[in-house]
Length: 390
Ligand SMILES: *Cc1c(COP(=O)(O)O)cnc(C)c1O
Image 1 (cartoon, protein in one colour):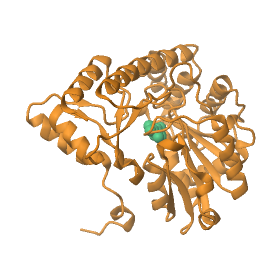
Image 2: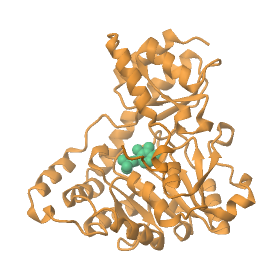
Image 3: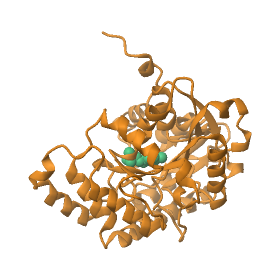
């Protein structure tokens, strides 16, 4: 067998492989499993999007290679959506880049900017792709701890000067996976000033920008003055429109940065199915868009309240998230993330994610995803309540 490259051998084991193995074991014992692990929406893509897709699949003009730089109509739709939802004006030609899901762009942006020896500033705990993309491109990650006492914001002032000298990309993600934290305008302004001062490109991952509760409205990075001089924002139809399987996302913001990413991508992929891009146009611009989003917010808000109530009754003192579909909670004393998650799974059949899977500063926490219906969440909370004592 031919030896895989170092970049493959250096990869940490995929978080969910070990969990999947345990789930099989527990199921074989006849236990009913409730999965609150992976953050994949359980409700359907809007009907109006599916109808448009069916129509476009039948149209032979969509069966050829799509334009490399993305379908113009889709880019226009993203610009319209940003104008209507964030009051941000974008030039669809230069400031919007369609992606095969935002993960694709988040993984590839490193290849457009990172040389061996360069440093990326990466939140920890965080979405693993920021650090793994850095590794693949030969760069190094400087892990920025996200601590509860700092509202899960990185301490930008605490980053050493010698790190800043080599720093290229700064990743931030609000509403945040896994902590559920949200950004404030002041924080985003500080990030923009920091990036400008240190000549760093901000990569804001806004995958959960529409999943907010109690009337809270998460900001786009691009709402901050001057942000597009120093930043790009990744966004996705995955969580907003229950379209994870469709693979459609986009980046917006600094035109030169997007041009570099686009040049890399042109040499790797050849875009994605034009019919999917038309379905994306429908998702982003259909008159039923806002009411769909509102219903989705209510759905997750009700689930959040069930979990908030359940955890509170068990004695967990955590504030419920204002956005995202995650709860981030400390494990009880005497456990590690992994030992707690294993105990919960073995004794209750409830699957939660160990915080340590999101980086070393996630140790001591676990994550609950609100991606099952209320009755199952209630059942999960009652099982947890029986199994856990403080
Ligand atoms: C789900 C998620 C994404 C979205 O990924 P897609 O590739 O667009 O499906 C991006 N970032 C974070 C933090 C996520 O949790």
